[in-house]
Image (cartoon, rainbow, N blue to C red):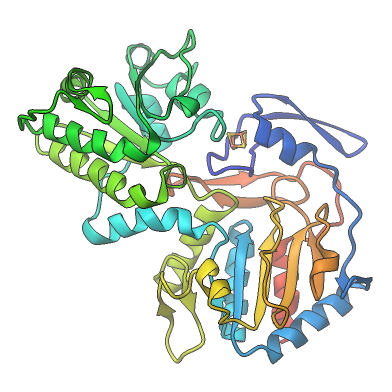
Length: 411
Ligand code: SF4
């Protein structure tokens, strides 16, 4: 079974379902356990905290959205089908569309938009890379199955090659992955706020420039030079990072340095990057929005043409500057609460049936989880593979797609 609870979308979990209760039997991680084993709850549609029928809740949502002059549809924790339908609603209601975590992948997007980059996929890394550098990504607390499935898989196309694979980690000791029998990890520990310095020094070493410094970010230059040498000698080095795990003020600089190192390497050898991110449906939302509008989220349908502005149309900025009057918050996966808004902002929450958000929304409509209560499709972190999610328990909770389509049909 595939797991929707982070953007790795691992598809080798075993689940057992007894009396509609799910237990993850193997290949899980703490996040998957929390997500799958959460009680489904008995939430019902609500208007101002009062139980109503689904039809009444949908009617109320239509009414609120029609009255709104500047609605924001965010959260967007949904599968591909849910996001597609949401874009239709945004067009009708002249809303702004964003994802709740979009700020995380905006950083990488800026680097990509400015100069482009060489990226690879989880499968390419697993099958062909002989050296991996993890730059500040916390693969212990998040993306827990990355090591098992990608760095040290039991099966792949070139098993002998992957057994010789060298894995390096650059970053804070607190999030450093530990070596296992299957995967030895060599670490360069530094404060996470100084990773950019290490990457700049590494770039200098790789491109043959002489640095007079003995240390960089309290790391001996000898260590950085040894890593540079190993990278140059590798057939296919891959750099892995997670934009959300890099300190925000350093993130642009760090990702730019990684992208430039990869550019330099590609003059004489093969090298690529892999960004981990787009959890809670973020990668699906960014892709679907790009297919349908040409822009990766942060789009407004208020004008005659679609307007893309990653600064102005960011959820946090819109809330901080108090420029919206209606918030539609969708999260069928992560169980995140809708953010706080001004008292004047009308709130429509479409969330997991287990959430307790009915009392803090003008209209609350419970939905099921893709991959648990209904089938669906989501896009993986490498943005090139869509994974089918099966329904695993009997449920009456509707999908985001179904609810949004009902709103669209009543418009
Ligand atoms: S690593 Fe992510 S996709 Fe894989 S089982 Fe854990 S939460 Fe699910």
